[in-house]
Length: 113
Image (tube, rainbow, N blue to C red):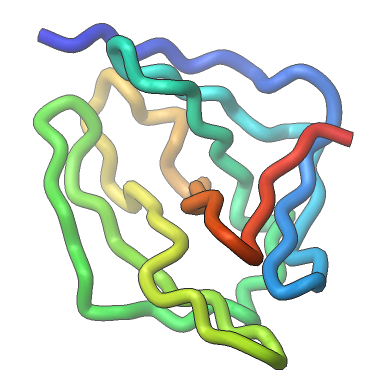
């Protein structure tokens, strides 16, 4: 079984897409799964949800649960399925409920400020 750890992320984190700030949080969580690089999860309350459109995409993780996906709609580009959320995570990772994670890619940045 992969080992999953979740801890409060140090400091304040921002997420930007297409040059626009989607959110900033000092309440972000850092999730590490096995040997994978850590992922920052932002509380939904700290993200401009109006810029996200839910898609039909879903995936399942045996350790985390079922993920729902969102696209980021910016003025210049739509980043398809660039955001995911475990809306009903497994009991072991319940603290990531109501949080969002972002695929870092050209035009989408997650950074500590």
